[in-house]
Length: 329
Image 1 (cartoon, rainbow, N blue to C red):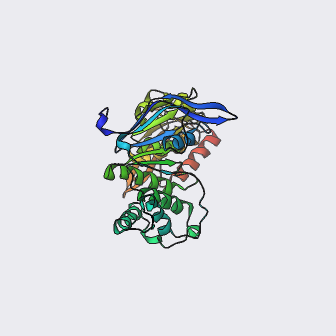
Image 2 (image 1 turned 60 degrees about the vertical axis):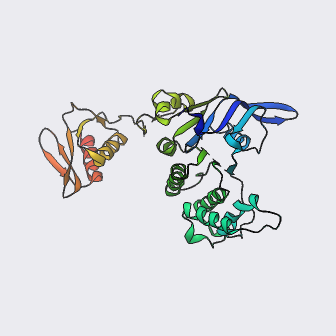
Image 3 (image 1 turned 90 degrees about the horizontal axis):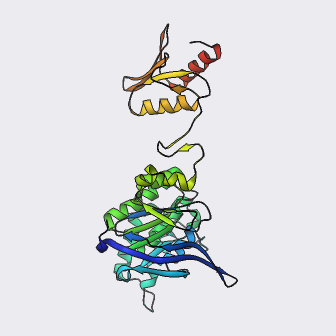
């Protein structure tokens, strides 16, 4: 991991911020970070911490207040920001071809190779079926994919994206992150994504850059930052247990249940019980087994006096709540 041959970008004592009324305001100070080839990095932090400003600085759109940014072998970069597109009447194909414009000569004519790269970018983000659609006809997810394809058409080894999954539904968010991860693996791209998608970042990123309140950025693999408490310290989660990935529920019903089983039905049953205020205890007299019958889950509830079988989790919960209301043991 420390092999310099794999380093695509370095920062040396970088100071990032802005100047207002001839006075400098630093958002990040003395950053010594690196991006590696074939690595997907998710950049996270609280709202307003300066994620967009850092991306604009790393891509050369904004001057640093101090320090240096070095791309190995002067590698070019591409960036997808959150700026709105004005020419909404152009097609998806037209938009993607704009990614080749930095390479065109004075006659602004695409070569066969340019067209090949455009076609490849469209295929990489699975836009073949909508290449002739106007931008105003696209969903937010499709438009974001088209912007990513345009950046890919620039054919740069390093790609920066600012909140590419903002305002998208779950399917589109997952698809975009999976595509970016695949590009790192198959095309050896170096990709930095500023995002608020904690759950997706933890499952897809090779590395996390985590902005702290003291103008620093902590870099590490997701699992280490979870286990050592860094995420908890930075975000100060309220009612969310990051180590389990679940919201903390209060056992409000004063009823304990001994739960047994395995697989996804067991996990979702535990979630339902805790959500409804029940306490899970291996020593409880009221016992619930999550079993299987004809490849479907069934629930066996055993009390002191009887055993009842349920074929739907909702019916089980209704029965438990009824028992609770009647004060049964």
